[in-house]
Image: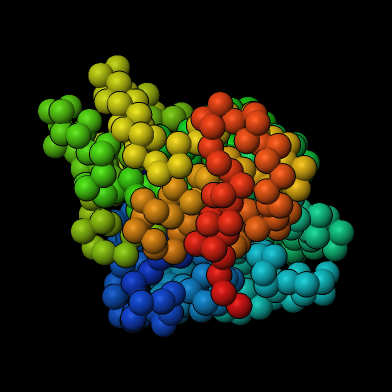
Length: 379
């Protein structure tokens, strides 16, 4: 396993981290976790050199932290840097925020949380966290030795992300970054900006919720023609690790075969290790990926601002990803839990202003209700 120094204390952190949001489960939902299989994956990952584990209070229907705490018993806790988060879905007041940290230490069976994040910061949740003084509480917990490093995760667009980076003396941030999404959310510019401010950057969704690991989508032809026997997942991971600004790449590995492959790729890849032809192959793969999208939105932003606040390019990105994933949960999760309410497709009133500006001539007012119906979770 390769390691990099992390943070002010120059912790020795593995470049591959285990994301504990997609542990194997019994049945079709997010819970209950298949504890026997999941524990074997966690402990095998640690034995292979992975020492960064990421969880959150909302994962696996609220059972994720308890599971991780149990899985790390028997001496495994002291071998890892443990990350968890303050999720807006888990708190409604300043007292809730204070109590959450205590509850997390208990659930994780630990006297400290190594990496602590404000979870999935949107424009709405940032206002809440500011109003209740969440960062003040987190910094006090750090003073008590209960937290070591403070960061945030966000799926918001670049301008908000850049402001967020500058809003606090963070140690690290967590962003979605992969070859298909290099121009959306924080993107390349956000990655470079965070690194230039001294933040460690943890990458989530390097495989775009598993979409980029599939071998039945059009981008596979670009990989086949390269002459290399790398899987789509390997191509994707190598691309992320090629960026010197990336500290850790999280992968939600729920099968031993995935763990074995990803550990091998982590060892064989590294910053600036891809050659010109390999980078061209990935560009062709991105072009193929873009051409497979059902709604041909280029995210140019000409449709913005929407009078109702709808983030039209983001809505089409989530909808396209939802369709490409075979209707699996990722796009639905992003729509319901990683997007400000004011930006949702359901706010569209079909005024048509965006359609007059769209260079793709998309019938936005007809598509937005469909996006909302497909992605909205029923109460």
